[in-house]
Length: 318
Image (cartoon, rainbow, N blue to C red; front, top):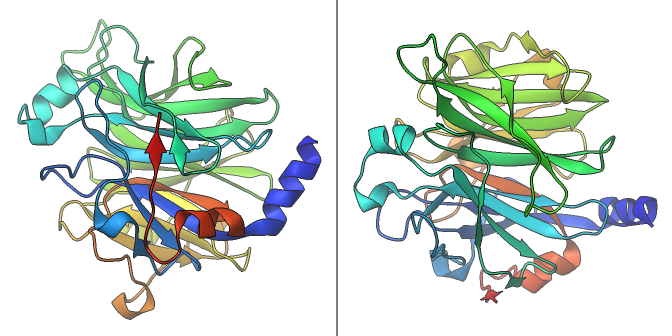
């Protein structure tokens, strides 16, 4: 069943769902949806208004990431429990923020569970930011990873590191462990699988740029890949990558938070090369709303039509 289901998904993928937030304005830190057929031209759903609201924790969410269970098709949406619009500021968000991530789940993208809060941050962590997940086929479970600001006994100040835990259902989690540490602060990690390799793209929070790494295993040693384009992009965060419909071209988008201009797409046919070409404005359309850090999910033709390729979507939460 598992192999047949995976084959079905591969053969019927017909579009993309982009889950994101839009900024620190009122209701900006909630869940917004956009759809695309080609992964480059996007239509906002629900008239550009939120489709899901968080009423738990800080009552705001950022950095949403949708992920599908390849064994049964269930889709989970995880997000940072953070609402800067509430006014506490970034220092409080890093030092005294939520240690939980927010989770929704669905079978059809229209009917969603009520959101739940899951504490995954280690004791003393100042935050749990930008959670993402990748399915580990060797364990038949998801590796969930996120940034937390922590401080060791010999450190005078806290430092952003990437932590991780395993889960099968996004309700119960293994013990959280340190997944990645760099000399600089590091946040906003995403992982892409291609050609039997794992490519990890993260934000160097000290230098405000992206770094690209590769490994043979999810928990293996990662080696940095030189990428002049990524190194030259300053003031970006929230990298997200996905294959375009040709099955060969990877699109990497980054949130230009410093300029306040939303997401910038760039393309490559070879992640290992580190070579990316930035698209000109006329080559893509991110839609009417400003897209901030979010995640992109490949969806089937039936899911695309169900959500409403015409820009209308009515979702229900239970």
